[in-house]
Length: 216
Image (cartoon, rainbow, N blue to C red; front, side, top):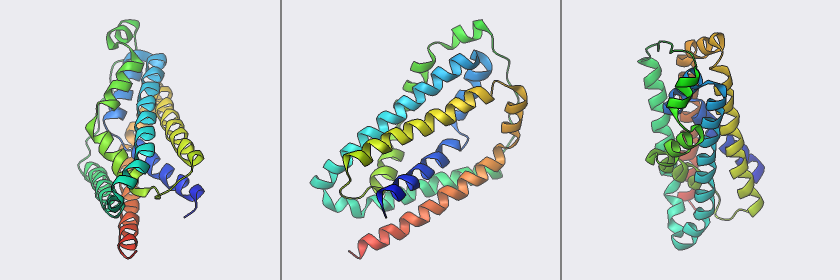
């Protein structure tokens, strides 16, 4: 697989994980409806900054880890497949058990002040989430080749940041519009089915990659 193809594949996996409704979506919904678009954008920027930091740490640490423990690359695809498979199953199960969420109050200046610093809230929420470390380490390190150029690593960090900021920024804008907010929330079950299927497919591809590495 070329580095361009790998970058595209990792971007698809990451975007599928981003759009899956979860704690970050709920956080953006609360920030947008109660704090307004400015607060929601700062929250999106904080979440994206933490994601960029996760990506940079794991991407550059993976090479050192491979040199110290070369055999770990035979194990990481299986860990990544297990994690993505679990995420996919969680999305599908949530879709089967889906219950619509009632709307929240609209934004006011008092609400925005009570919500605090948007950037710090988003950054701290993501950077202190242990599941984020498991996801980035297993998926990114599990799919990275043994040797990759600096340009590829920097492109990967930038791509993950742009995808995160683009998605969360869109949510911050769209969820502040009642009609769009209602449309997004009414299609939440379909989004769960879609992302669950995508993540499951990539988990199966990683299983195939793990089998291929065992034969090396």
